[in-house]
Image (cartoon, rainbow, N blue to C red; front, side, top):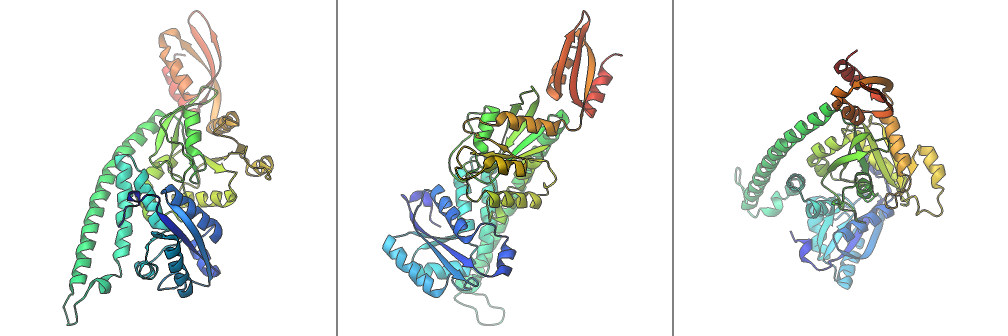
Length: 428
């Protein structure tokens, strides 16, 4: 397989089907229109530093079993490949191995489907050891599905009972090698998962609230994470999947309350199942939060569909029950949109992560959810036990402090569990 990074601005064509079958559209759970989805694939191509020469959309009742696109359209694509000197055809769909081979034979360019493109972006962007393992696991699982069905193509012999051609033997060898590698990668990720589980347990025992940023790719999550946490090393780029590896940092709310803030990979329509499987432990850790902030690019023409896509993935991951705060990012950009009215409908907070607008209201909303199951209590803390004061400030919100000769009376908001634990430590 060619490495796109080796090409200098590879020229590509983006091809898509507008399938008019309601049954198929329901099965694929497509949310974006074919035109919107094709435009998103253009952005994915640009993320890979490709130059998109043309976009071809064909209306058909169903994909062609042999070439995905219809025969006449394939001839048209072959002509466009020749005219534009394109090296790749990017198809906005999931292709079978046979469809890829037939298309490549007919158009004279390498064919990548939507899953291939996303996997290549992930392979380029993964930086940590665990991230690279997750991407390779997803890639190997995808390769295994691509081997299926090539037995007759690879085999040049075989005809008698019990005989096997060299192609069939090669197919079995390739399958075994990939499965062995998948087993090895799975075990390595399980070891990393155990370390994550220990860290998660320690975080739960610390009783520090956990808030996680989620959203469609390129919605502005990393910019918001950087602004709220003060972390300067996180990459903030106007590209799809700019951040793959999860980040967790401290976030001090305006009241002084400490929370842990996590940023993770963005979602997208048609996110390959192999990637969801490989990144499941990372996603589950980030989604194991007390509050989720769904960052929505309100300036995008498909913002409603993006919300639906994210919520579908949350349901698939079993995180549909976690409280969500909607942050309508880039609220300074829309001109013909009444952002305030839409925000009222979704009970959302209009913000600009880049310029810092609306972040105080966002913080207040998060704290309101976190303090929903808390009570206001007054505690008498002697000076000899002053270390408990920092614990009170960390766990809860201090409302008032008054001092005497022996100690301080602290009025604060605490969870019932923290209140009971701290009360046992204090005299009287």
